[in-house]
Image (cartoon, rainbow, N blue to C red):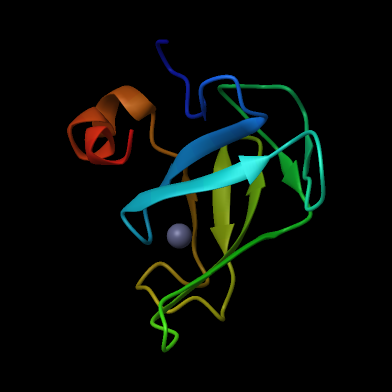
Length: 104
Ligand SMILES: [Zn+2]
């Protein structure tokens, strides 16, 4: 939908957003078994808590640690990518759909 920065994954309790630091989607589970994040229910200006930590690769290649608040993503200093210590708007999914389709 227009202006939405989250996408619900099928009939799962997971949503994805596009991470402008990693240039790939991250996934947040809002119901069901742990780990579960609190979510304000907003698809356009979401807030999640607690912070979102993504660690990927064996050996570890990527760390992305962020807070999502009011539709913005605040990257913390332990991120590996160039947006660490910055806060930027989450991209509207329509604007990244060409990249996103490889993950759906
Ligand atoms: Zn990321």
